[in-house]
Length: 139
Image (tube, rainbow, N blue to C red):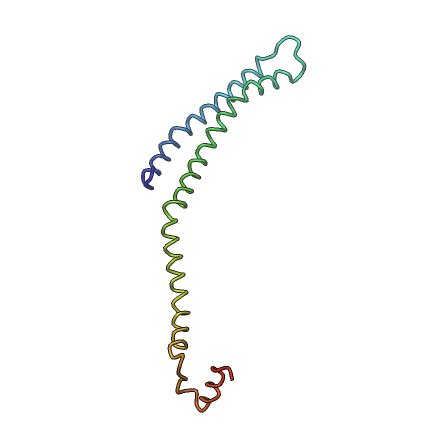
């Protein structure tokens, strides 16, 4: 189940097993409901009572078919969550680390030239050396 190929095979096998079961249960439920509605009249029944009794009796079969049909989307959800949380997460984290490292590089390069010559004034200052010196000293 840990490799994508094995999970895909497992999902295909489960789909092949469960879908016919759900279809069979649904077919049996429809047939039983039809038979019970037709032949289910008991002496003393009110109008519509055989129909209600047939629905009540067949409901567990319909619920079982519904539950089987819900299993396949749940298995697909498991597959998607596993893939997202265990297979793709390391790649996403690495991409995030690289993006963060790239974002830090320009900031470090921008800071280094101005901080590298902290004790001296660059030659391009052009005549303002004494003003900049006094500002650095806090005068």
